[in-house]
Image 1 (cartoon, rainbow, N blue to C red):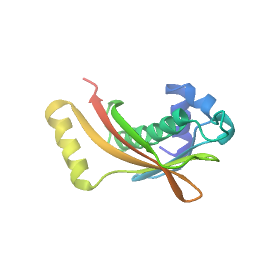
Image 2 (image 1 turned 45 degrees about the vertical axis):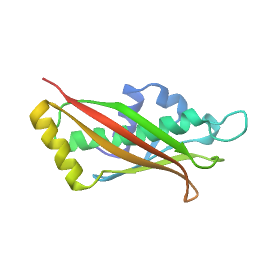
Image 3 (image 1 turned 60 degrees about the vertical axis):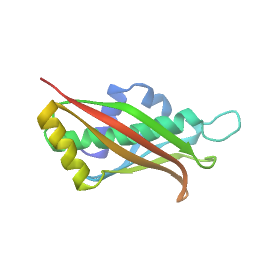
Image 4 (image 1 turned 30 degrees about the horizontal axis):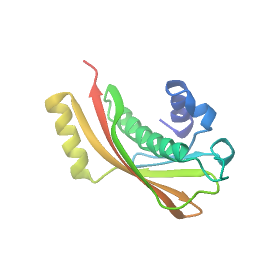
Length: 148
């Protein structure tokens, strides 16, 4: 899957992503970068809306795991089981979320879970940055449920 294909999938599967202006800037087998334009996501204080920051971070991790599943021929659904965010500083521009797959031992554990239970969980971390400065940190536990 490339950036455009993933972005189209997001807009199809999660329609609110169109209103938020979500775009997939970079995608490879290990990493992703997702953005949302400031104008679509600002609040009354003229900073990025906290809900939009959370959503963009969640979508970055969800998209990375969805891409991982597709690359590994896994059929099923990716869902957020638990998410936590820490807002470090206000964002005054576009929301840009960066995520990477965890260490190989965590991926191996996830695959083992899938083989044994037809479902597995993976924890993904996301940094939300503005001009190279970290403005928020998100940690999400995502479940993958295999189709039977």
